[in-house]
Image (cartoon, rainbow, N blue to C red; front, side, top):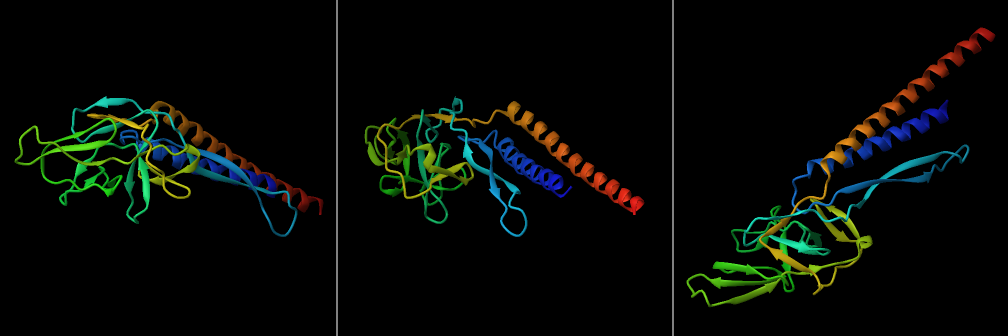
Length: 246
């Protein structure tokens, strides 16, 4: 009975972990540039006294869906969407680099370019600082040009270029808030990564598919709980038989 209960317990735990990943994806259906996380399982032998036959099931949420979300027009100067593969580079709170597809940018009160969630956007020269301007343009190659405040419309000043990167997907892991980071080191700028200004990329989460997964995982969890109840009933029945036979 011990083996049956243990198998059911690890299955129920894995279902709960998978459910949390799917719930996280559903919560980010409307998050710009969000990449859906995927739940995978791996086996890990249980070490210690007794037989070495028990295997623990460990859930992992470090894989993700790399498909591109739909692009929507916003006609907003600071909205950008990556064309095809690639990432915007931002600075995390601890100073490390992270990568995002969320291109709904803004200028904070200090004149720094940042994401909608407050991460500083990096250019090839570090965090991008913008002087006061009356018009701004972000080119396909990520070059940021402005018409300084009080200047004539034909007075163009180039500020910096967005650091656009395209590291291999296998080298990226989730850093939370829809961002990713490299397992080791920082990515180098990739001149082949281009953007569309005035557009945003939607989340690539499929709401209908995610809801179906939630229902399937809920039923899987219930099946594991029923198996544990069955194991308990069998154990009680075996105990009664032993008492009778004694």
